[in-house]
Amino acid sequence: MPDMSASASLAMTHLVPLAAEVDEDKVTPGVLGFIVFAVMAVAVWGLMKSMSRHMGKVDFEQEKDPKGDASDKKAGSGGKASPAKG
Image (cartoon, rainbow, N blue to C red; front, side, top):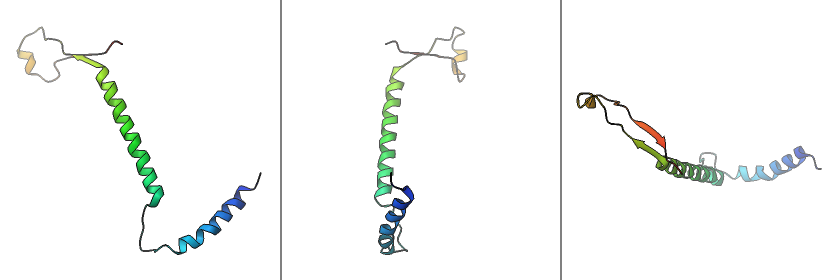
């Protein structure tokens, strides 16, 4: 098995001339930045789709207040959330 530090130093010697050609006043994210952004966007899309699916399974039914209309004006008048069956 070859030494990893030797291959890393060999890779760096090939990348140093490329870095010398880059304008030091201009900083861009490059391809790696785009790939990271794309992966994060796909992850957020997947999480939103999963959350939407899970929220669709929630069955929320608010119970009628047995005391009457006077307590309906209060916030948090009580409700019951139960998961959908299936």
